[in-house]
Amino acid sequence: RVRFLDRYFHNQEEYARFDSDVGEYRAVTELGRRSAEYFNSQKDFLEQARTAVDNYCRHNYGVGESFTVQRR
Image (cartoon, rainbow, N blue to C red; front, side, top):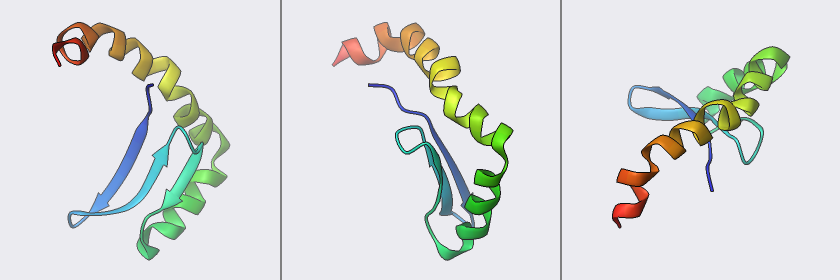
């Protein structure tokens, strides 16, 4: 299973994240509420995040699988 996570930090504290399993940005702290609302309102930005798992993650997983996952 491959997931895309886009995490945002301020002063070493995560405040917002995108998880491809959820499909939208979520606030982790109160600081991240406005950011998550803004990111979710930007339809092009949100669609780009939603497709990242297919466009970026699955490809790179296949490239690195032989020397990461299979070494266990």
